[in-house]
Image (tube, rainbow, N blue to C red; front, top):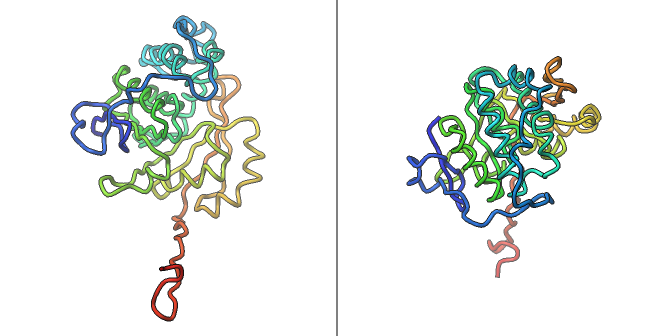
Amino acid sequence: MPAFSGEPAADVAPVAAAAAADPVFAEPAEDTPSPVDGAESTAAPDPASATLPPELAEAARALFGDRLDLAAAYAELLATDGVVRGLIGPRETPRLWDRHLLNCAVVAERIPEGASVIDVGSGAGLPGLVLAIARPDLTVTLVEPLARRTSFLIEAVQRLGLTRDVRVFRGRAEEAAAGSRDREPLSADIVTARAVAPLDRLAGWCLPLLVSGGRLVALKGASAAEEIAERTEAVVRLGGGTPELHRCGDGVIEPPATVIEVVRERVVNPRRAKKPKRSRGGRRRGDR
C-alpha cells in the first residue's frame, strides 16, 4: 500500500507528504481539539495511567510480540491526546489495556495473513490501529467521518510510524464504498467495526466494502447471540451469509472478546430512486 496523509475537506486522508499534491488527499484539521461523545475534558491527563498492568503483561506480549513498545506508545497517546480530544473518557484510562487494546488485538486471530482490512467507524483507532500494530502483515484503512477524530488518527499513524500500512479515509462507509469521479471505491478482504450499530444496519454499511467472499468481523457485547437471532433475516437480504458467533482470545484474555462474522455471499444492488413519470405531452409531472 502506498503512503498516505490527510485534509478535512477531502475524502481520503493520506499520512505521508508524498501524496499531498493529490486532490483527494487532505491535511489534519487545524481547529482546536474539543471533547466529543460526552467525554470529560482534562487539561493535564496522566500518561502513567496507560502503564501496562503486570497481570496483563503476558497476554500483551503474546498478542503484540516485538511490537509491544509500539502498543504502549499508542496506549499513552490514547491516555493523553485521546482524553484531551474527548475520544477516550478519563475513567477509561486505567482500563485501556484490558478493555480496549487487548480486547481488540485478539480479533487478529480471525484475520488471514496478508489481508486488507477496512475499519468502519474507527473513532480513536479501535480496533483498526490496534490490529495494524499487532499484525504488520495487514494493510488497514481507517474509515471515520468526523474531522477531529480523523485528525487524531492521522497524527497517531504518523507518530507511530505506520504510514506505509495504514491510511485514513474521512467519510462514511457508504461514501467509501461508492467511490467518486476522482477515486475508486474502497474494498477489502475484511471489514471490522466496534460498537458502531446494530447488526442489520452494520451489514448494510459494511458488506458493500467487502470483496466477494470477504468477511465482516464485528466486535459485539454480551447480547450478540440475541442480536443474531433477531437480525439474521435482514442480514441475508442484504447479501450476507448466516451470521456466526465466535469468541476470540480464549485462554489469553478473560473474558474472551465476542465477535459476529458475516460473509458477503452476493451483491445486492441498492434501490434506485424512481424517475418522475412523463405526462402524455412529454413533460414530467411536476415540471413547470
